[in-house]
Amino acid sequence: MSEQRIFSSEELANLGKLTLELVEDAIDAGDKEKAKKLSRRMYKEFLSMHDLYRDWVTALLTFIGRRYGDSVLSEALRYGCQAWLEPLCDRYEGQDTRRKAQMMIAGLRGHLQAFTVEEDEEKVTVVLDTCGSGGRLVEEGAYSPPRDFLKIQNPQPMTFDRPDFPVYCAHCYFQNCLPAESRGEPLYVTEPSAEPGLEPCRIHLYKK
Image (cartoon, rainbow, N blue to C red):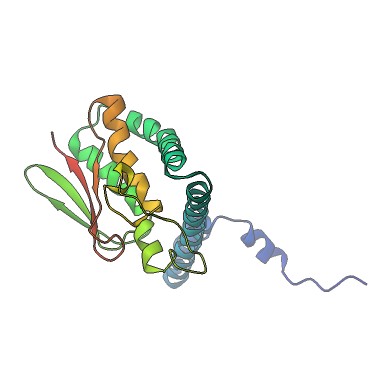
């Protein structure tokens, strides 16, 4: 004997919709409270997926570093970062500084955490009050048991010459240097704090 249905036809249809569509439907219907509730749901959905991939990448880097050592880990980070940095550099090509800053900030909003933007005569700087990826891993205790992700022990370029450096944060070195190697100048420059995850890191976009 089949079990009784647990979803109505309307519920099944809505389960298959993007939350964005449901938000737009609620706005069109004038239901502000429903739209707000769905927006908060969408944020949680995106953050869950963001953190899943963040943890997956960090676990893979941890496995590579522990199994094959720092040299292979550095090669893997270089190869992986190159895959997304080159297309990103292409999109920035020919844009003025204002547009580059807007593009950089739009990308950082994808980490779903608040930050501060500053400007001086030399540069535009994003101050990551809470880094949505590497910083939050530190805050969450991910480098201690049970997850026990890798901290790179030996000071070297990918750790900004620091010991005991969180493996996820090592990609920032390649983010800085690879565009400079291939294009003659950095795309932007990440400045890790003295204690990533405990103090704000900064990303600078230079005007010249």
